[in-house]
Image 1 (cartoon, protein in one colour):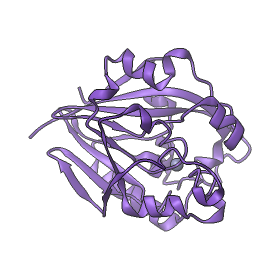
Image 2 (cartoon, rainbow, N blue to C red):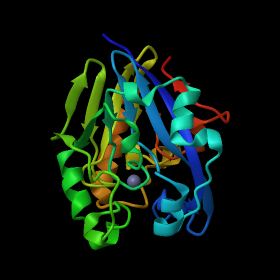
Image 3 (tube, rainbow, N blue to C red):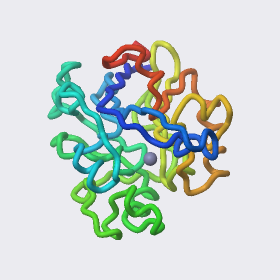
Image 4 (cartoon, rainbow, N blue to C red):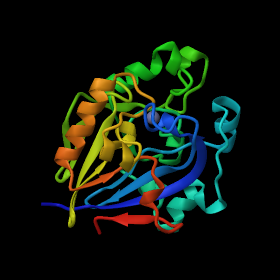
Length: 247
Ligand SMILES: [Zn+2]
């Protein structure tokens, strides 16, 4: 079977209220989190999630300070690992929140994959979530406005050794990416699993549309994975540099 290698790129960090990650746990404490863009190399070149467009979007719209060193700018981070954005075949979205879908314009030759449920919800979410999707319904111009998606309905074996696994709960159309590597099945969870602690203690994400679905998705991810790669945990980055998994 084909195998793949995964590189996690830290494209900047912010300090947030911790219970946004761990529902009703550690309320009032702060945590610094990475904004990860994933690169998967194998038979094709794939990006999972495109990070935050700019510090300005974070500050002016979301009200959050994004800290981005020059080498953490998405283009610079890709250059660091020798990846030409024009050579990317596919961009897969775990979901369409503002911090996961901000730089689609960098990949002119890619096809863009998301769950149909996610795209529908992003355009007309609950009023509470309009800002987090930068939804047009909330008066925002979302970075995915001009993306023509390949819409996926449920679980999908995209390529040999590369599977999209629907994981609703954080958002209706969240999906994880299950990747066969020489070191076993690795799963890029998106925000279905924010941090290792969520899975260790079975704490749902603090930001969610459905807790029961969130817990089901977390259990599914644990079952199908040899290695879990959460979305916002600095344990992914023992050094201040791109981190290779499954290589
Ligand atoms: Zn999210």
